Amino acid sequence: MDSLDINILKILNQDARTSFSEIARRLGHSITTISLRVKAMEDAGIIKKYTPVLDSEKCGYDFTAVIHLIISKGKLKEVEDKIKTESNVVAVYDVTGGYDAIIIGRFRNSAHLEKFTRWIQSIDFVESVSTSIVLNIIKEDMEVKFD
Image 1 (cartoon, rainbow, N blue to C red):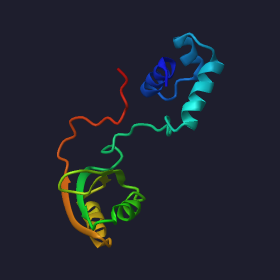
Image 2: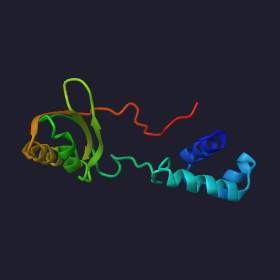
Image 3: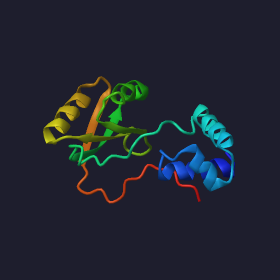
Image 4: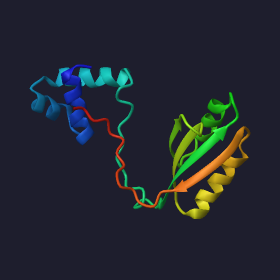
């Protein structure tokens, strides 16, 4: 990536609906150059997808939970592959420290979270589950920042 790619991404980070013609105008390049650069970044997997940023609570998901897992040695990928397919799972991370994986999930209510937690506990090779409910979201931003 060069400075033009980074400047394109900065604009798309602000509003992914910005037209190629508007990006070209702002950056002083042709529409063709911009569209080719965006296509190349999509093909390279730099741009994974375009999606709106939604307010989870306004969409009915009042509970955010951080779930720490200890998984039997050698079975991490197998367990994570099962968990990542669930629609309420926002993120799955391999981590260092006392746990093997951390799951971030959004849930409609406590019963929804309890059902999910019981399901995780029933998965083969899951040895331990520790769940924390997020009380307040102070900052939540998955956007990649360019300095």
